[in-house]
Length: 202
Image (cartoon, rainbow, N blue to C red; front, side, top):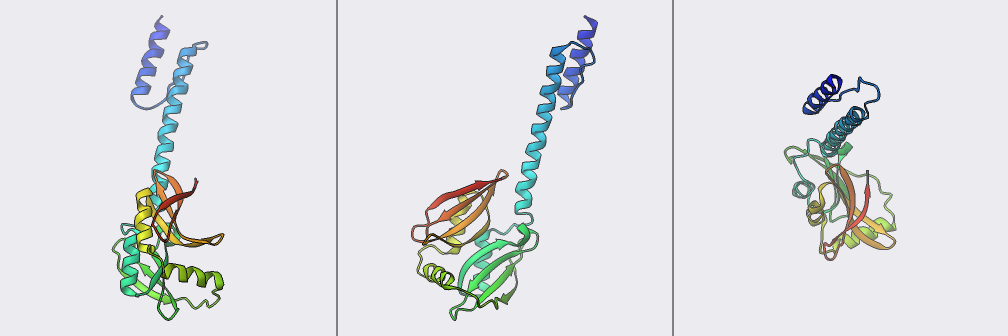
């Protein structure tokens, strides 16, 4: 009887502090089950902490949203925004690609904490194929631009990237989001701004 009382006391103390307790008395299945339950609870708490960390690191330091970064980039370099993404998942800056009226493309870097333009660099890669030109033409005539696509996708989570994509002849905006540690990809229709899920990934 005394042995059972001691084990029960140790078990209650361990559960109250979030720890585990070992079953010191052999053959006590109840104490062993209690240990496994405490271990499982502790592991679940660790998993939740890991998810929260992943959620933060996906957009770390990015007080400025994708939509705000696009607006700031267009103010600094007027034109048509075709993409925006956090360099190294937010470690450095937002990079917004803007195509000017003469067809030249610039990468505008936006500070993720203040929204200040850090500079613009011309994209000297002239290797734009017919698909790239078709995507740009579709974007210029669309009712939904990059800024609006980012705003629409933000209802699904924190947007870390938005860009234009041609999927089997259908041009649409794509956006990557993160919410509660879960990463998702969405399509945003050029004409209506309707958001549909593309895929989830861990």
